[in-house]
Image: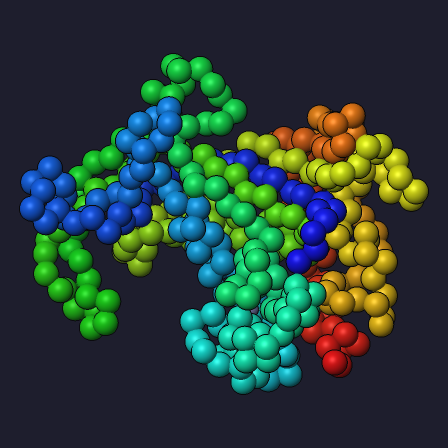
Length: 339
Ligand SMILES: [Zn+2]
């Protein structure tokens, strides 16, 4: 990938369980009588001590598989798309169609260099990464502590309490009751706070993430254990978003106005037919910065950054979704996929 970072988008948000949630720790009771049959994953946190948390990898997995699902619904003809709008990372195949795996295909073709691997990767791998391509999206672990509040008093009230719940484990293969009942340790209240950063992003990626997070936040994409039995529904609250341009000392540079616009990475690359090694989707116009955004870094320290809150974040999401729609319509880019 590029050594240089052209743009970055950071979103800080809270996930609130709407009913019971269980992200399994893999630690069963065994010989320890203080543990339930299935326990919520815990970690040692510097301020919170031993606490339940939501691993970033777990949330990223949920986001990725839902993004794949969206892409598969939109991709009309898999056979004509190479790579497809979403590959299938669970297979080991490089044959065109719905079994195509970008990471495996790149290994088979012995593709070298970030640009070539990126060019031959599906939009989902371009966002979430694969075995040969680093992810543009980095997601932090989610803790029951609001990073925007620092008072100790808040920490206590933010701490998520777990409760035991009786459940019947379902055998994954046959669907029959394996054994049980089990006692599950679930979180039913409170919130998990986290953030992700997307760097060198295209505007269509913001649009795709907007849809993914909207649907997760409406409880349509459950997480964790026993999803099909109604566990794991979440609500999302956006706390803050930041659009930043690293290594810029002034908000005005040539035709760029970093305080006024959200630029697609392709706009820094002079992308045109015959000169598009990463196969970026060309974007003519930037998204105007939502009104009321606060310029928090003006270049004095070599970075321009604007912070958005509340309705401004929704405004950015709504502006980004049409870029995803446009991108889907034009996938794959014939001109650049010829080679
Ligand atoms: Zn892929």
